[in-house]
Length: 426
Ligand SMILES: Cc1cc2nc3c(=O)[nH]c(=O)nc-3n(C[C@H](O)[C@H](O)[C@H](O)COP(=O)(O)O)c2cc1C
Image (cartoon, rainbow, N blue to C red; front, side, top):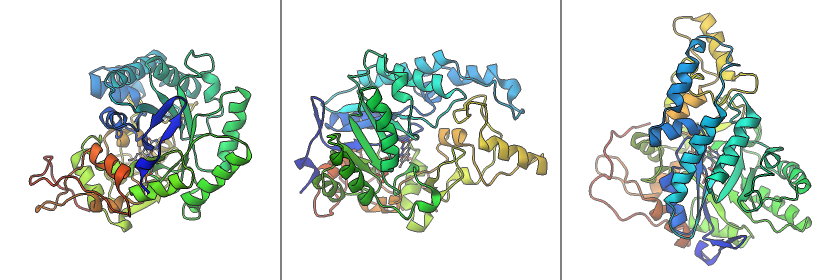
């Protein structure tokens, strides 16, 4: 049995049941998402740090303008007044989504991953603006993530595309799903799909750090599937986290999954946003190099490589330019820790318990990954100099789609590295 024997149906659309998960900040680039769509699957872009991403991609100046406006706050711990312009968020989101959708080919879809935990010092207005602008710009679907999204549907209930855009949510438990469904039922707007993310996933995890090893995707998936059956709900359920081969994927599809969501395999794709050196670090990693820690100021556990540059550097908080994690009161746990470290050592404050998530994700210095990252070396070739060949998104997608018997089809070997950069070693 292979993935290609199955199809995902969302409304009138049929997709190859492979979803490339959202990876912020711009790791799941538009090019990566567009490849998934071209090949008939679903690719995600992510709206994490959308203003900064728009600047990089399209030469806008949202970050510069914000930094200039708030530069007097650079050395002040109170960032309550450091706000985003809602119109900037709308403009950046519209630009990014419309350019991506305009470039779409093939029969698949481009969805956007919208994290609730990006509070942006004004959680309601900024999330509403992100969701509305994505729909205005023609996004095919929205995947609500990093939070329970108790009010997200309500924010967009009057949008003309509220019932036409595909909407799904990522949950890690039946409990979280029930909370979301309760609200969705009240609006008579059930989700079109549900992603169940297990503890082997990359990025932030929806588990208590002490519970990460207690749960497994298979059991949570079956529990939610049963719950949906009991409720007579025929919403496609999409497992995510540690699905490394086409065979892993087809096993879930045989059990009744609508599709699978995968990400780590695509981090090393030519189209992934991660810089070459970091891709090589992913490829060089060993199982013992992968850690789950609490250094993200969001309060969620996060999985990453322990040699991530982010874990070695302390920096002044950069909320004037970025500030995506600031809560409704302008707080971020990193600022708190930085201020405490500054009192101890004003010249060289050292913060080990938290890191500046915004700046480190922006510079690709946090090498977040799924638990099976150390297996990436099985999926490609190594050159004589020790560096690895990067597969294309198509190579990886088609390996998931067509491979059987736990085999992994590697890309066509190249004689020369298909990139130019230093190889980083662990
Ligand atoms: C590098 C990386 C970054 C990620 N960033 C996000 C994110 O910004 N938002 C999110 O909801 N999930 C994020 N994820 C989770 C993925 O979308 C996906 O659900 C999960 O990693 C699938 O498991 P796998 O990586 O084992 O295939 C990220 C995963 C990785 C590997």
